[in-house]
Image (cartoon, rainbow, N blue to C red):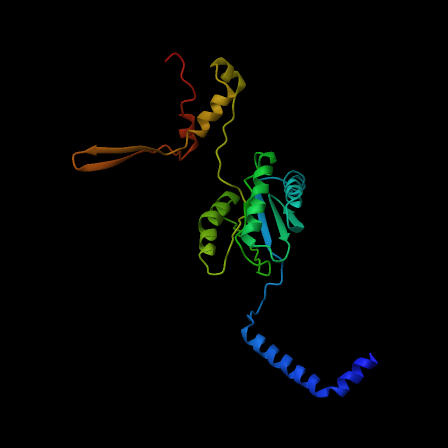
Length: 251
């Protein structure tokens, strides 16, 4: 240390010149530096959202979160995998090495999800990737409650009204409704009637799946006019499902 100090004293003009150059270099660099109130200080991160309606947190963690984490951990350039599981939803954060292109990271995660998607329970929706955004962004939770409306009406309002309006707000990247009750029609099969009519459960399932669909019938041309034909078959009440044809016997 003493030789360095002695050399600096003997060559003080050189030390001062280097200090001035370093000062001006810092000022010049600071002029071109990006300025942000909340700079992005996180590694490239991909967020996976998975919904499992009606599943308890323990089931979501063992049947959904753990398989997703196991599949993602083996991906290239992954430095850390974190997750959070709640009632009916699982969120997995996949952090990549610094400098990894975010779109390449999303492609890597999407390929892994394609492999593990078939092993998830049937009531679990397909995992989706959240929009590209900084993990420094804010997450806001709010609840909708009413003494006059049932959970079904509240969930319908959240899906069709609140979610769409929030997505139209500048700066909002994702809105995920959780909870409530989703509108659904349940068909209860009676085994004795299925056997009596020689109808298999597969035929019944196919009939139910096709009972609520709109189908395009093409275009009908009459002279210079063209008419678009459409078969409207979407059901509006359970009685219309009961009128569906399940199978044809004897022509």
